Length: 388
Image 1 (tube, rainbow, N blue to C red):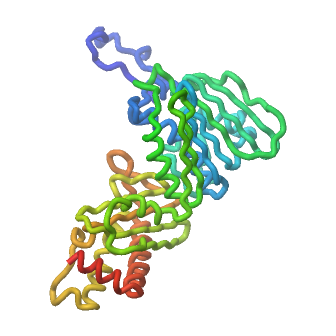
Image 2 (image 1 turned 30 degrees about the vertical axis):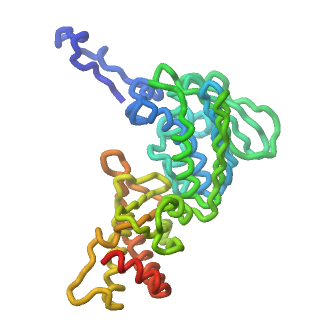
Image 3 (image 1 turned 90 degrees about the vertical axis):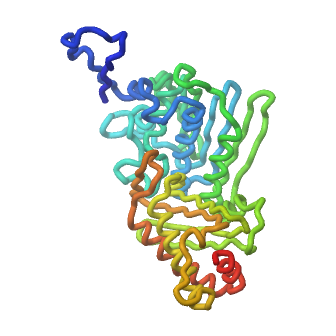
């Protein structure tokens, strides 16, 4: 990556003096420290909290792969963050290309990790896949501990540089990783974490991964609190949570799921007596705020199924037809997909571009919702009458 001095007043030397010495080649993590916004979006409070999400996303990847059941996020005194998981532990063996321990590569090389090359994870979140090294670069200090089932290791860094090489602390029978870091006050506008901001994001992750237990602890003096989140009902409970202060028009959340090849899709939906639609969509646990193919597939199928049912059972006469706005009034729904090669598009890389996922979601909703309505005519009547 290169950075070129712009034509600021203080750089007002004659143009003919412009030469090779004016070009900075930023090596590795130095680039992140020089241009943090390119990697985490902003150095405001939002960017600060993004550091936590990047480390948590790595633990979530272990959960998606079936290895991690518990994640603990602690805000320690001095606004230090500690994230503990019981996954397999970040690999400590020598990485062949670099000759360094894999854990060191993960924390010091951009775009390193199990997400690139397809070998490590079938499905992964961590939007940019650069999580650990970026967090390391933007931290005053960071330590990583690994339990690999036989040995307990530790490694320490300061502003991205190794200060304590990988060292064994002795035998262990545990597995998992512990990442502790203090964000760098030279980089961020504020280094004070907000419990509720973290709670909102972590609760979302707990809903999206049924049965995963996430504990959030604030240990700062005078601010002590603890919240444990685990939802066996997954996205069904997510919808119940979103509708908790609403009058729902049918008691049970409608749940539909299905898979094809390496892709999995699930939908949970329930209507309330309001007029606003609240559809949240996710791809590999990333909130796709700009929507995308999974959301389009859901909306298309929903409109078609309700029109077909309405005609078949005489709710709609002649040429009468429901449009999307009609069928989504008062709807609360979660659309969540897990897929191998997620293509993110749009302004903020939060729009899912995979066309095959549209077909999968459309198919499962068409079949699943049609069957549900035919088996639950009283619920179907309430939904149709609201839409009409």
